[in-house]
Length: 282
Ligand code: C2E
Ligand code: MG
Ligand code: MG
Ligand code: MG
Image (cartoon, rainbow, N blue to C red; front, side):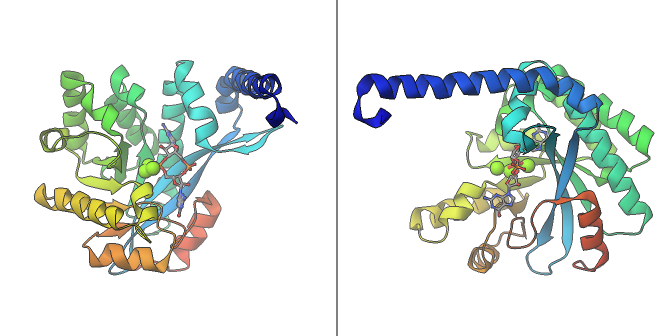
């Protein structure tokens, strides 16, 4: 109906937008409480070394079990938390929860490699990241060398001195830094070198296009060449097919993550996965 008349169509869009704004506002109002009342939980997705199938890391991905809306993905609420200034509440909850669960895997002798945590640019900007990591290590007993932080290009590029001080502390602790969604930003080689990341995580849009798009093949080749030139490790995200995995391996990408290997799983499921020996010991 709305399609056939200009006014109807306009009304339709504004209704949808109003609904979205209301929903965002309602979610925003609940986030703080959601963190405190245990409505958030983490999924974990393994990263594997392509050549061996060995699990090299497990990425923590936050979800919200909303009493009315069901399970919400981070795309629905992380930006809202950040806009409300709740990045610290959310960020430190994710950090300490992931570290506590990883400590339990460690105690059970499960070889998970490292636990990888997504960090928002605001955590870096606020300057609390290194302190949070220190506090978490103390509180959970997890060796910080088992931690990996995933930063985006925005997080790394904006914050000159501030960034470098925190990063120096983190590096001293043995924390590894990963550049997430690599290829979607504008990092120059100089920036990448200065950023102190040790791994480039190739964004899934390039992996997806690998199937039938020759431009994407060249793009992935170029991204891998950058990694090689700077002597950085590589992970491809969003690998969904055997062909994608094979191509990436043939092009020299070392590790991969995606549905082809394993979906993001709840803590008990990843434990089972680790225990059932989808991995070889380190
Ligand atoms: P990301 O860090 O790039 O995470 C990868 C996303 O790809 C995840 O979406 C994951 O579930 C999804 N994925 C995994 N395998 C496949 C696959 O084979 N195909 C496709 N199409 N997708 C796959 P998710 O969990 O919805 O997270 C979205 C984004 O939200 C993450 O992107 C990350 O930027 C952010 N995020 C997640 N957890 C946190 C968190 O604790 N803190 C912050 N600040 N951001 C987070
Ligand atoms: Mg990530
Ligand atoms: Mg990513
Ligand atoms: Mg991504």
